[in-house]
Length: 133
Image (cartoon, rainbow, N blue to C red; front, side):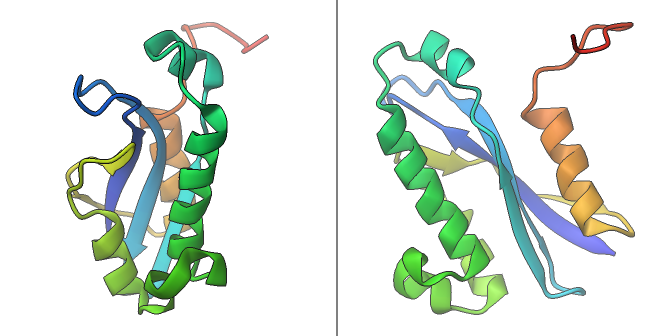
């Protein structure tokens, strides 16, 4: 199945343009699927922006996820069809939460693709031979 995805980024100081990838949002029209996985590495974000307000970041990400999920907490945008919510979420903006350009991919299991993209673009890569301990 074909899908479109974008990376979700925290841009603590928009004027500097520096960001940290914190998630992935993925849409498959064929499956009528819209999902997001978000993981904030607080230590990495604090190294980028020592004074970042983590409660504010978490609040913004919760709204992003609520819109993606179609939850009432996402407000009126969350009531739109999945395709419209995806396009709204990935629209360019100059706020603390931004997305990358949209990319396409193909997978039989979009849930697995979402997890793989998170591992590839959000999580810190493990050194070769590292067991993560």
